[in-house]
Image 1 (cartoon, rainbow, N blue to C red):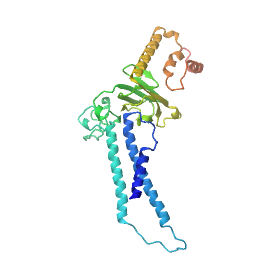
Image 2 (cartoon, rainbow, N blue to C red):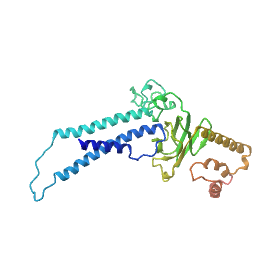
Image 3 (cartoon, one colour):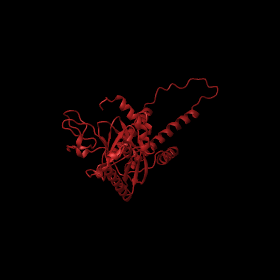
Image 4 (tube, rainbow, N blue to C red):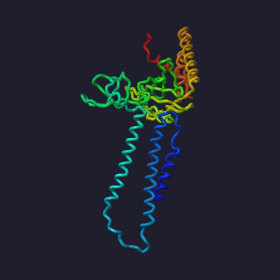
Length: 334
């Protein structure tokens, strides 16, 4: 009994103090961490139990010196086999129920939307099925149902529009973020702390995966399919955005930044982006003939990848080869 108490205490302590996860920066991360810590506690307990039994057996039942006799002919122990089969089965069942509950609280399931025509469900043709994941309404086609992609709103926020909506597009090898309400396009994601954020994710070319490690969220971006992530950041700071799906030769360079601001700082950033966009648009509209191709393209590519911006000088270096290639292949009358 004393050994069991010690084993339990060690498992509980390590399960809560393993230090394997990055900081938690969202409400969703807290739920995921609780599930992960529970699994770590159970795993450590089972590991110590199994290894402890092996060590005890290794020393207690080892062959004695000069003992050349055969071991006892034991063919099995039915009660023991039932116990070591039933206990893992119960553990797996409990973790499965816990995982289901966490996914439901994250907004992955929407059992209250069975009769909502704007929510996609997983079903066979002609069958009636419970909806699985809340999905954008524009993908719900009559008579044609798919399993929706993504994480929707938490149950307490169900039916309430998100505070900030951002369209996310993955392409080889960058993430592009568009704020429809302000007509802002940037290569970095800026959001306010404590607000409900909705990301509408899609891919332009191949499959990508939008991964926020500190937020415990990861969603595949699939060409031709729209996905949604909703979350609430709780910690101001700078966080990496990583592509977690092998998408080509430069997959490792497909990284960006997520900035969580206080509300005032976020509002200031939005105003700066709107003013900058208006100035750029006005300059292009007033005297477009005075701008070279490289000058025109530079503002759009400057923010695509942090630390890898393409400036006007670099574009000018590419322009002579581009022009030569076109002059060689173009007809004489062009």
